[in-house]
Image (tube, rainbow, N blue to C red; front, side):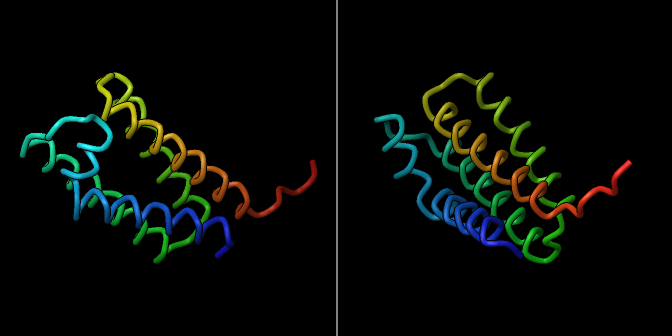
Length: 116
């Protein structure tokens, strides 16, 4: 696994753990408001998704697995931008960065194409 892939996984695990363990604190820091229990539950679910995605790329660190993860991150980015709330926009920025990282790792790990 490349250094970029390991760095991406470390960021994803860190972000996922923060969302799972301290969603209220993170959301309050981002929004300036105390989040509802429902919002904290949603943040925990999203954090769990990141942990599962990091585990999947650790078990199968192949370019196509990172590419699929990048696609999931991109879809999540769009959904957060459509929500257009402060916390959603902050999450969208993180998702966009993770999507870009996943695609980068995926492309870096792809075997070279034969010349035509």
